[in-house]
Length: 149
Image (cartoon, rainbow, N blue to C red; front, side, top):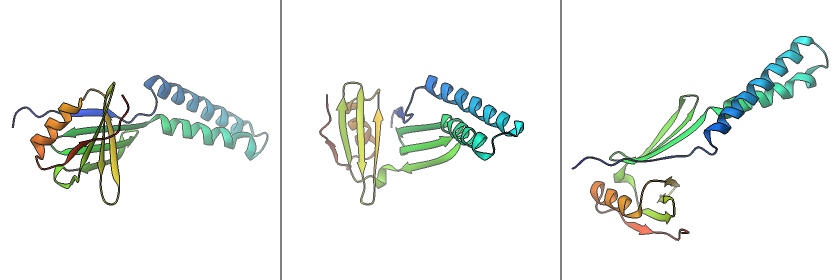
């Protein structure tokens, strides 16, 4: 085998600047909720919403999802502040690979009997992904789906 090609994508649902804004908003709400709690006025309803929404903003700002397609197969990492889980779909367990070419990359579906996995690789073309499937698992059925161009 030659130099293995690794296709990577990201499942991040919002841009990095938005993560930063969410983190700042979360810290602001947490500190304001703590201030309201320590001042002692208003009871539970005065500070609890600030603490709940602030901590949710901080938690969600630490979300990251990374996907790769390499010689190991399809790898999906879901991380919250550096901790999380990694799911691997090895090439020998794939039943089919459905490619959906788009203007800015290629979407891929990996249907399975109990569930299906999907990914979008922004820098990959349909030909690149077909070549990878041919290299790592020549008997894998690869088809083109009804993607939009």
